[in-house]
Image (cartoon, rainbow, N blue to C red):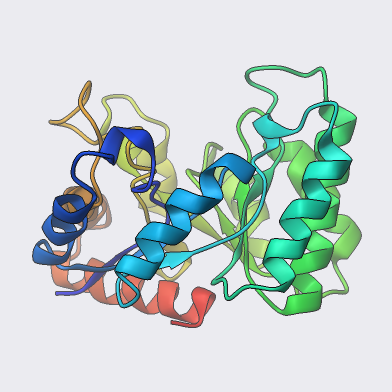
Length: 255
């Protein structure tokens, strides 16, 4: 079986002592591709270092995370744009709007998100969207680009079934991670009702580890655990989940 982790931060400091083993553990678990979303200017070097070390397995994206949008956002956006347009990236990500931590720079986050959408359209790349406490606001922005060819995924999809249907109606996939394994998680209902053809697997490592690893560092090697829960909820085999979600990821990210 082959799996793809469509969202993992294996280049962050929590992995600094064992980048190699984290990638190798994932590959040994059947996770042949790991897609690396950028966070901000400070993470570019370590992300590209990992991608260059494992070019067959680790594939970088480029963007600035919404929580990194501050007073100097215009300067940072120019730096990110230069990198994106002069590099070889699999997607524009991760970008979006985050209203969980701080709403101070909401308007600036919207502007940044719009810039990223326009870059993705121009480069014909998928976009990876962060939508914590902002899903409806994100959909509203996307509706301004209905006539474009914009495509991508709502990373760590945080919404309910009604919101999930709105997202897939707009041609976007749902990123399903360790949260689906948590007791009383709303994701169970979403995954049960949404066709596999609209789901992607992800870890968001080192964050949001699945049961039974809660409280520990998440790993790309845990993708099969998430896939097993999806298979259980869908009433299908693990092999079918692996095949369909891997095909979905290859389609979205041109792998």
